[in-house]
Amino acid sequence: MVMASNQRGTGEPQRPEHRATEHTSSYGFPARLWQALARHRPPGLGRTRAWRSPLRGPWLTSVFGAVLVATLPLVIITGLLDYIAYGPQFGQAIPNDVGWLHLPLFAWPTRPSWLFRLTEGLHVVVGLVLIPVVVAKLWSVVPRLFSWPPARSIAQVLERLSLLLLVGGILFEIVTGVLNIQYDYVFGFSFYTAHYYGAWVFIGAFVVHVALKLRRMISVLRSRSMRAMLRTSRTDTRPESDDAEDSLVAAAPAVPTMSRRAALALVGGGSLLVAVLTAGQAIGGVTRPAALLLPRGRSYGNGPTDFQINRAAAAAGITVRDTGVGWRLLLHGGPQPWQFDRAQLLAMPQYSATLPIACVEGWSTTQTWTGVRLRDLATLAGVPEPSSAHVRSLERNGAFNQATLQANQVLDPDSLLALRVNGADLSIDHGYPARIIVPALPGVHCTKWVSSIKFRNQ
Ligand SMILES: Nc1nc2c(c(=O)[nH]1)N[C@H]1C(S)=C(S)[C@@H](COP(=O)(O)O)O[C@H]1N2
Ligand SMILES: [Mo]
Image 1 (cartoon, protein in one colour):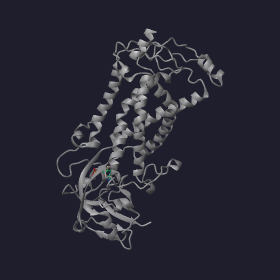
Image 2: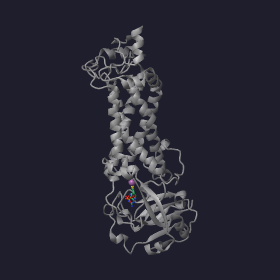
Image 3: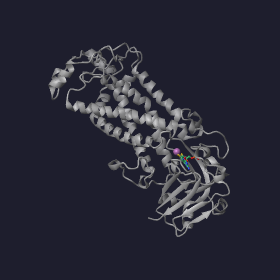
Image 4: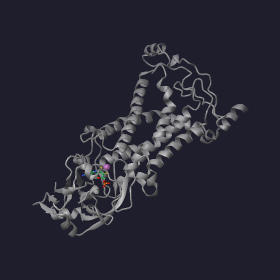
């Protein structure tokens, strides 16, 4: 009595009770199949000498699970929002034709101007920061991958299939996401397509997994005192007691080499390190130089045009000849087309707006842009109330040489055909002679080296 209440009082995990090795009673239909499988255990599988960490158990897994169930929805929702921000209604979100997997559409707002910077920054930074937690969670359950028989009922077969999609889905999203932000567009369109469909596979499996495990996770977390678990030193660390059939507790636990507190600190420290090395590209300011993992997010000098360049003019095949005195802006879609050279555009009323460029890679940078309002150009073109505008670049072969803007994006008073930035002429790498800049518009649609704008009405 005294001993039992003492043990509970310290919240110290107890030694696992002797666990039965065969659960003959617990096979579902068709029991003979599962029993036959159980008798034919492949050599080496399910041996008690493997997976001996004494830290593994329902509590540790539940802690990682709780962190993920609380934070992954943020990554999912911001990811889906970013897809909508790309303007699927104009066929310019990738993949474009997604059948019944399409999302409810709404016109992406232009306010607050940092909206896309926020959603894309959160998606990339939180996604990266969670990688150590995902790895830890997988580590904590990895023995289950090798348990035998692989299933004891049809329900379990389905559950394990969903786990395959869950684990495969999240690893796939991590790999494709990280490759995209490190190497930019080397994968062309297929990255977006893969990341989008991969996301739906993952989301489906995630919902199933949460539905199956949430109650157990909560009851495990409630059954032990978090404070006591964290106070337990390495030498006092014991395997958890758990007599569930699918127990995560090692059958032959080794001597602990670290406490659970240290294990959580290790994972938390890993996440913190990732945050420090990446968040600066989205947050900017003093944190920017620390974004060592994502060098594209850093800048190189103090001049007015010294900020991130996504695709330089040379890479886009843009030469000084294209952008020199012969350059004209073509406005069409109205009763008649109009052409303007840069001097004529500079002679029109000029407006300035401090707006971010926020790239799908997660980096962003806020600059002060000056130029002609898009809505003034629409009026000039003879389409004062456009339903959309199609912008084209001089660039001939790039994947991002055109974009369609929504009505609210054309009409916002801060939406500009920018001619200057931070008081200087645009540099050729930033889109000289003229580029699009619109509040809350994904960076990819802030077309550089603009050659024409077609205003549509209908
Ligand atoms: N013509 C053209 N415009 C473009 C691109 C491009 O490749 N070609 N890249 C876009 C992308 S993906 C981003 S994030 C921004 C980056 O602008 P910056 O290079 O001036 O920072 O430009 C956009 N405009
Ligand atoms: Mo971008």
